[in-house]
Image 1 (cartoon, rainbow, N blue to C red):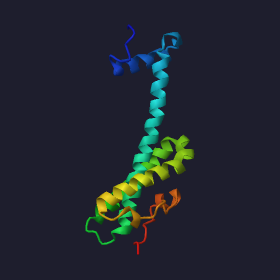
Image 2 (image 1 turned 135 degrees about the vertical axis):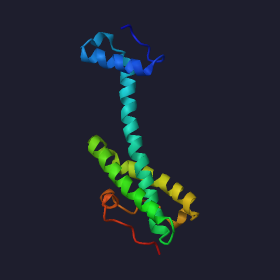
Image 3 (image 1 turned 45 degrees about the horizontal axis):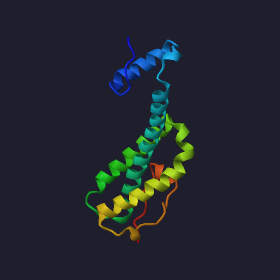
Image 4 (image 1 turned 30 degrees about the horizontal axis):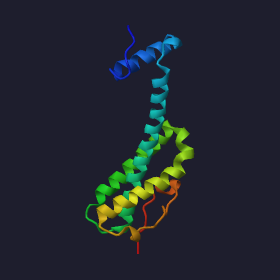
Length: 148
């Protein structure tokens, strides 16, 4: 099999790089692109967690600030699903644990924008910082009390 160019056929390139690694043909590996792809993979896992945290926090904010909204059942399903997906993601990627605090801050900022857009409430009506700990909002029995 000839060398497959990274830019020409990514799929075949990945298979070739895996084969070269398996056969310990390290001198033939496209090291520059392989390092780039590994770094990209870790960033992708981080973005996945940020995205799921954003969705969960936004739905918890809506749950808390629109207690009489008719579509709450769909929010409940989304909250339950995101909790499970975040839990699975953390089990699969325990190295992300030191990043959780920083990601919550970013996700909450994004969730505020989303909640404002979806509820029509002013961003100022929501807490400026995330009012819940990771352990709290991941707890299946936790449901925020209605805002006053």
